[in-house]
Image (cartoon, rainbow, N blue to C red):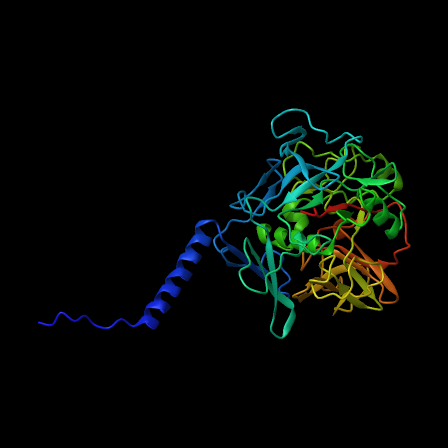
Length: 443
């Protein structure tokens, strides 16, 4: 019997070790909650409850919805999802002062009184996105040969090179652990735009005046922490609404919002914070503003009036002579060619998506692009309040048009998360048009 052992194949051993390490790494990612949720939208299916199909780790999940009979929100199986945000008070320097009780913003998380309604507080009431060291990564994949259909993937890690975390990028081009969106419509207090409970919302400002008011929150003008709301944030949040609701009809799923009335007095009488004690989600199946309490306002992901009550302008999306252009980051890491947002579209990335149909009618087609999902066609002979995206679309293909979203009181069932306007110049100012804050910390 020979005592000589068989020779070792080092190349094979190294390959096996590498394969095992890859399996271990994947197992660790999964063990730490690594997930990739997905959904597909069939743009040729008009039923908003049937045009969304769950993909990847979303398969088998139970969608959320507002239980209008019980007056409670049903989280389905999404209540503990990694992307759920937290309400907090954010100081002027972009740091969190403390977290709020999610079921009663008048209290801190520890039960003591908060500053949510204190206009003298040096900061704002915001929702914090990103928790437990996990950011939110998103990828949009248009269907081959059908740009009005596509898939969206949401992950807690960079699952491949096409996933991006654009909302987490600050003005220095750095991806930071958190970004912040406004709990309330913007209010102008001492010339500065604020997100504070109990305040009257901003009105009759031009787009530049809104941006200037928001940026007054910055202690140093060159360090842009505070701004008006941004395209990449809105894209992510609206995608999350489709993901958890498994529907493109946001009014039916989450609440109609304040969509009746349509007078300046209605806006003047409103004070933010009507649902401070309603949890992160609340809505009703009425859009009426009849009792003066504004109790039919919608609240999603902890934020008031995401649609309805007042149009809200935002940055990072422009239309120039019918060509839609986008910018997903303040810097140029998204492929744009200029730093900072602007109101001309200079340096933005052209996506096309020239609107068709009739302005002011129901949105029946969106264009899917890796850069974003953009409104494309309005036609009430095809779309309706119960078909396709169930919301309206205003546009003007001549000149430079800045975007606003959500709709206002008086627009009725046209309001919703996907109600879009590319109809007005940046100089336009009226009582039904306002803005909200965005916060991207420097660290």
